[in-house]
Image (cartoon, rainbow, N blue to C red):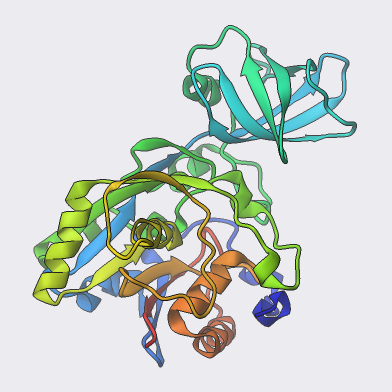
Length: 343
């Protein structure tokens, strides 16, 4: 397929700039061949006892840094991943080319200055060493900002610190939230557990590459950015038990789905940690996931291609048109979809 097959027109006012007043107060479009307009709080009615919901427990780090070169030029850094206690891979935005050996200074709200040295370049990313640092995660909490997506235009604030994070976030490392999980709150989990639903988890650290556009018309030429995931044996066991009992596996978010399908790419779902660059297009054979809970995705994005593979291109095209007509809220802070896998 081609990039232009995944285009649609979205009125700008439907791009959610702020989350719903309560996490589970968003709308839910249920797609099972037809579409049904629901609220997210209806989710417990759509799962059965023994079904498994798989969550991505990654935690968003304050990955955006604002500063200047020692020479005076302004610079912005977006951390892709933390390498160790003092080093990280970052995307850099500057007015002039940044070379190895360049000294950078970052600060926040006129606080203490953090110095970093550019060690070199790895493809589109730069390797930075933060001088005198032993814990990059702690440094980012002090001087970084929440890396809101570029289509959210307000300056990140304390509300974003809380709401651009799932309530079950645990493992530091993501630079974008697994946004399908933003709709869950304690009351929702209580209702699901009372229903007899099995809650399982994995970790996939969403990278900065998730914001990168697809730049080729022929999609076979596109190469996905690599992301690290870890799948525990307890989640593998929960899925195997559900399969044996004829129950369904729900992936909460495209990141959970990619991790599960990557871990089963050899034919059998296996525990372990690895890098995945799996690019899911229509025609992909899904091995693990029966239902997908997700938000609405950008035109021409790999995530729109993924949900089109899962539900069928025409089904998604028609569902998105319905969502636009019904004034659903789109993207990270927007509403959700529950998609049944197309045969």
